[in-house]
Length: 317
Length: 133
Image 1 (cartoon, one colour):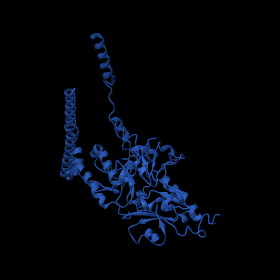
Image 2 (tube, one colour):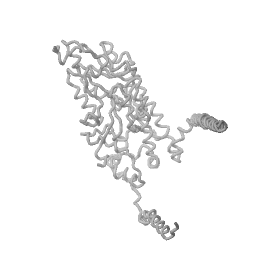
Image 3 (cartoon, each protein chain N blue to C red):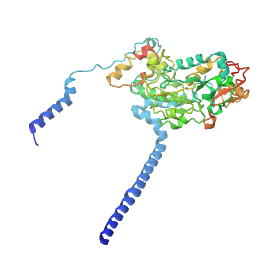
């Protein structure tokens, strides 16, 4: 018995030793090391060949570098001199006066201008709808500031909400294909070509500012505006701060249609219109506690005061 | 079990299925595409010249468009300076399709010939003439 027990124990012990050392610890460690080595090799190779490769890549593919060379280098040259008419900004931002927007009743025109010019499909089902700018009340827009004793005027005020073009955009961090990215001027833009429709950005956006095209959007576009491309099924879209308009030196559509209730400008420029507006009034941002640093500000120019309120001016009992 | 008659018979059937396209298409020559440059915008040009040479555009227009796409969408660039020094707006709709507004006769003629199915038009379909709808 004792012999048998010892034999089993020995076999077991040998098996465990063999199993742990070569197959569990040693091999993965080695393979990780190999991967790291290969990665570093690739990185070194790319660094070394990077400059040469980027210049010669097109030429090599073409097979006649004489023709291709100017085409390959030209975009880089134009990037520097691009858009001479377009105003540059360090950080584009919007300042919205919701009370004024309600007073002028311009919101529908704002949404119409934005959605029609960007070929946003008008889908009525709220589960699959696509929207770049829409309205909601204080309790939904500024949940953390809500209280039971808010002035009725503020409670009933409608706030236009859209992509906040965050300084620290979560959507950009989670995007696995870098389809959404933050431009140097602070605008969070989308490259629809790269979007794979995984909806990580929709999950991560604290403002619900992104919509997926659950179905082919074409039938839901009443009139296609040739000035902006449409989208395909399975592509996420959102407000793009009208980058195509800024490039031409034009204001965003919402600003143009808002009759002065929405201002745009450089938040880093103390002399800009937006900074002047922010300096003259209390302003709030959506969910600032998250640290995303939204670039869309909402002015409260006495909107909380029942006497000055444009809508629901009578205090409710 | 070894059944040579069956095996050879089925091999012949399979070989026939595999080679059927070759046999059926034998002698049938697809017409070499002749993309049409006959559009109002091109005819109105003083100098009939694309952004780059025709040979380059024929071979590499997809790479050019890809670099334009990256430059416009990601870098915010708007203009392209050609190797001849001319400046163009980097826009598929305005620059490319502005002249070549005959998609069926220009783009599709070659793409169909080489069985390429670019999905440009699924989104860049603003104008009726360009969509081919």
